Every structure is written in structure tokens, then in C-alpha cells.
Length: 321
Image 1 (cartoon, rainbow, N blue to C red):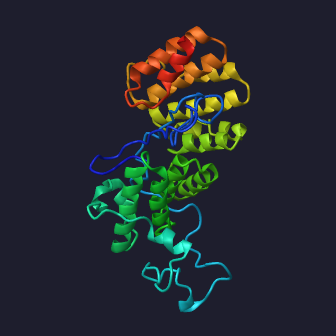
Image 2 (cartoon, rainbow, N blue to C red):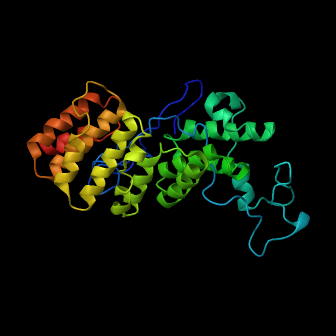
Image 3 (cartoon, helix red, strand yellow):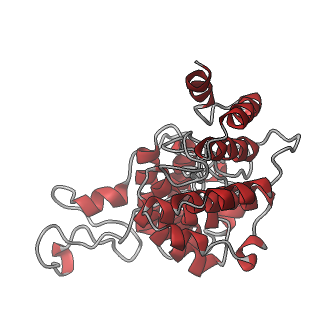
């Protein structure tokens, strides 16, 4: 999730965990070992659209159930159930569900206006005070996504506990779950978001989550014209990185290389997706036993990796020592 405070819509970056090919933290991995594109570094795909986090992300599944251990309690004995105005009832120690609803503290200088205007528009169906609280949690989820994904996830969960029927919130929940490596949860949230919004922008992360769950065949199902038609250049490239990684998972190295070679490997652009694409390609060349070519491409990765998305310097040290 991108930090949307005063910066406008941004795509999301990689979570820099695990292999290089995962859609970013989201993250596509490239090749062997982990889902996402290429296989050994840390890049991940970006969706190419404003992330919902930073616009936000709530809890992983259900909203506060009002249960503290046994059967649900009724009436005023159910303190963790929000009242009709959306406020949690008070009384006694906070239950786990109430703590999720409360969420982490939000700095006083964080405003709902820090959320980009397109995201705020998706919250217009909520009462004003509720929309403001959800928006502030979404802003924090975006701000914290890369530096502290677990805390970002808690902010998203708090937003989800208040507005689980808002597609933007479910999308943000999926992004933060993805950044935390909670693959099954991320898939569930992205599916819910897609039903609500019709958006395909998180397809690379969904496919990558399938890889992480050791279901490469399911990841390949996202490589469809109707999905690609809704993705921009960055999104399509990120999806290709993941699809190539799924082919590697299945032992189809030649097919993986062909997929990556169909993308703009030689572009003069320096966007993060270019770095991830080249890393995935270099890593796949290495897996195919083409070491000299792999070293050449790892050097090209190093030339664009100004944001340290990958572990390319370590890889080159190992290969050239």
C-alpha cells in the first residue's frame, strides 16, 4: 500500500520479503522458492493503481463477533458489539474483538483529508464520523505498509471492523495481509473486494498468493485476456513475473523464460517494475544454467535498483566470487 498522505495515488511496492518474484508485499516472486516472480530477491509486483491501503485495511476476517469465549451474549451483556451508531459498547476489560475494533492509536495530526480524494469518495456512503475514522486508519495502513506491515494490518483490521462492506476497505485489508505474508487471508479479502468493486488491479497479488500457497496451477488461471485488459503496463508486467514464477514452480523453465522475454526487458524506464522484471529474468536464467547471461542481467538490475528492492548486490558477490 502506498502512503497517500499528500502524495496522490500511487501503486504499491514490493514487500521485500522472500523471493524476488512475488508481487510485492505484496510482491511477485520470480522463480524458485517463493512465489512471485523470479526467485531469489525481494521484488514484487505493483498493481499500478492507487492502493487501498493508505486508503486502509481492516481485519482479516470477520467483524467483531461479540464473543469473548462462550456463546454470544445478548443485549447489554455483549459489550464488544457496536451500537447502532457504530460505537463499541463500553464496560469491563476490552475483548480481543473490541481491541481489533479500536485499532492502534492514530496520531492527532493524521487527517481523513490525507487520504486521496478518489479513496474518500468510496467512503461517502458511511456516516461522516465513521468515514473519518475509517479514512484515518486507512491512511495509517498506507503509511506503515512497508516499514511495519503488521501494524499496518492492525489499522486495516480496525477499518474493516467498522466498514466491512466497503470494497476499498476489503482491498486494503488484502494488501496488508499480503504484505504480512498471510496469503489465504489476502486472497479472501481480494476476492471480496473484487465482488464489490469489479477491479482487477490486484490480480498479480492474488496469483502470487496462490503460488505462496503452493498452488501454481491456480496462479496460471489469472493469465487471461479479460484480466490483462484491465491492467496497465506495470500491472501486466507484474502478472507476467508471477506467471513465469508459477511456470518455474512446475519445472517449465523454458516457458518461464519465454514469458519474461515477451515483456519490455530493454526499456529505458527505471520504474520499480522494470527492476523486478529484470531480476526475475536474471534469476530464471541462473536456474536454467545460463550463468554468464544471468550475471549480465543482474548487473542490469543493479543499474535500476535505486530503491534497494532486491538483493542483487549479494547475488552478484556470490556469483562473481
